[in-house]
Amino acid sequence: MRKLPFYQLDVFSSAPFKGNPLAVIAEADGIDERGMQAIANWTNLSETTFLLQPKDATADYHVRIFTPARELPFAGHPTLGSCHAWLALGHKPKADAVIQECGAGLVRIKRDGTRLAFAAPPLRRSGNVEPDLLSRIAASLGVGEQAIKAAQWADNGPGWVAVLLGSRAEVLALKRDGTVLPDQPIGVVAPWDAARDGGEAEFEVRAFTARGAEDPVTGSLNASLAQWLIGAGIAKPRYVAAQGTALGRAGRVHVAREGEVIWIGGDVATCVTGTITL
Image (tube, rainbow, N blue to C red; front, side, top):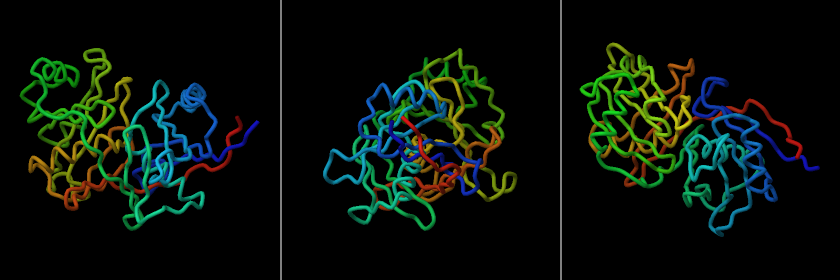
């Protein structure tokens, strides 16, 4: 039997229990894919990650990311949470930035004050959404097609398609019918109105996953949304997105474009530490 370091973290929130939870298991070399999947199914969190020795000599660590049902090549809150756990174990990066190796390749992570931030990976698919799919997305979200101001493929691994609505209130009022468009992750975003919504954030985001659930705070979606919104001039180069409001959370994603790189940052709170016995 082995006892491995175990963390349960809250990502994209400085206050515990207001962000997106993540389980991290360190020193996981030797656990096969079937074992990792079984553990992720048992934790039943949106993602569970496993820290391994890197294969690439330039990387600081290798992470594998599992939902309860499948492995992901990349995901945002697991990236920040995994890095937080790796640093908490006393590891030091080889260079100024931490280099994470994952299924999507190498991802840079930097300290941004009290936060961590990752460099948004390139999109695997972008461009306009097909009219038939857009119609089905509108039906899935329970809105008319005219309510969708714009839509784009925004896939950096999980398969996101993103739609822009007119207001925060519209986003928060959504009642998704997952039976209309099963297996398609949908991200929804709308601008805040400072006079009505306040100045704590500039955008409201909701993420509906392929397994039919709503994700509390989603780094991968916010990374792809930022590439679209900033690139199209819809968002400024630096903004804050709120997510999780409809679920009683208070997630905050800090977005900043520096040169050609878009950084996705957030706080990480440690909720549980200990060991897992395998």
